[in-house]
Amino acid sequence: MVLKGIDVLMMVLLLVASVFIGIYSFKKVTNNKDFNIANRSLGLIVSFATISATMTGGTTVLAQAGMAYNLGVSSLWMTISWSIGWSVLALMSQKVHNTGADSLPNIFERRFGPDTAKLSGLVTMVYVVGTTAAQLAATGKLIQLVFGNTLTFTQATIIGAVIITVITVLGGLYAVAYNDTLHFFILALALGIFVPIITINNLEGGFNAIKATLEPEFFNIMNGMSFSAALAMTLAYAFSATSNASLIQRTLAAKDAKTASRSHWYAMIWYFIVSGTILVSVLAGKILIPDLGSPETIVAALVVKYFPVGLVGLTMAALLAVVISTADSYLLIAGTTTANDVIAIFKSDLTDKQRLVISRIATFVWGGLALLFAVKFKMVLFLFSKTAALYAAGMFFPLIFTIYVKKATKKGIMAGMLSGMIVSLVWLILGSPFGLNSILIGGPVSGIATYFVSMSTFKENGENKLSNDAV
Image 1 (tube, rainbow, N blue to C red):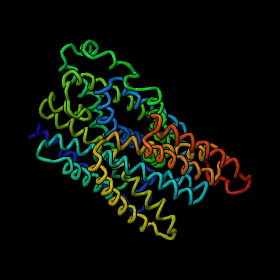
Image 2: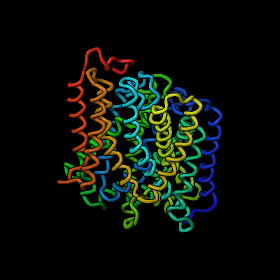
Image 3: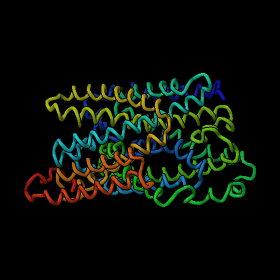
Image 4: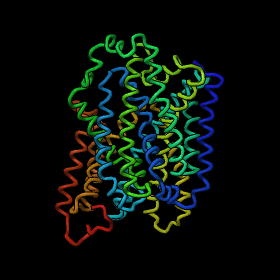
């Protein structure tokens, strides 16, 4: 179905407003710190909203919704798994903020020197580019759904990628955070209220019809999930949430440590709410649209089919806002990590202005690369899950050791990063032997390597002298 009139106008207005915010934010960016972490100025409302909007991304409204359409309640494993790791980060958020770092790699650099920043920057790039590609693929699917046969998936994805890249290049984290705040209030209205209420109202029998019509397996938390699969998902998402580069960037950008901590907990409450409303809507959608060809588009399909004119445009704008908010966040990480944690370490005499220029150029380049991946692979969950597993295997234990373990060493941290990512990658290439997810192999290897190498290389008064309050 092709939307017309006021519905298309509302979506266009959202895109125009997003670009306008990017242009407005451009004036606020006077140095690299502004571009990277908004000069540590984010208050509670903006901090909470940008975290909420970023975490309710294409993975939630497309990938997880598609999983719910096929498997039912067991899709909540994604929410549970992510929240476990997120809770760990929320608990350590004040310590993370107090490091005074500008990025995740910079946390390692402040304690162990530039070599750890180089390596962690490269590991981070694998994750953020793959995740950005997943969100661009989600953006393309939504835009294509709106405009029907008039746009191919590739054309729709290019349109979304151009807008997201322009927003991010112009205003950095200021643009991303302010856009996320606008997007959050739109999606809270749409996904928190309109979608579940209107969907249930169009289902004869309402909630009772869901229980009576769907197979019992749809209400089994282990439906379609083996124990090893559930464990693998829990570790992959929990590990990647704890060390999530975008969440850590928001933690560092908060105006103080207390704001950083409260923002995470409030956003997590929202995440549980929206996961629940989406699940209920999808279960009803399974009955209303039983033979949907692309399960990932179930929420959008329900909106297009059952919502009144005007509200269709608002809700589709909210769905589009969801993926834009996540995509621009990870794209920003890609650009700033390249400039500040990779290139700047190899060329230490860069001026602040040069770093800002490199950040913008790198953001543009990575946006183009992510677009190519999105067009090539198309599958949102595939792109996210594979890159999340590699990243989490190499980053989780080194970060925990850096923040909490006084006897952690540079060699131990680097051994953990390398071993976790390489072992996980090799396991993935081999086709996950014995049906074990790569994170189940790479993660423990990373933890063991970090511990034993650190213990064997620790020196009381050597390289491990702390230069911040991380531990």
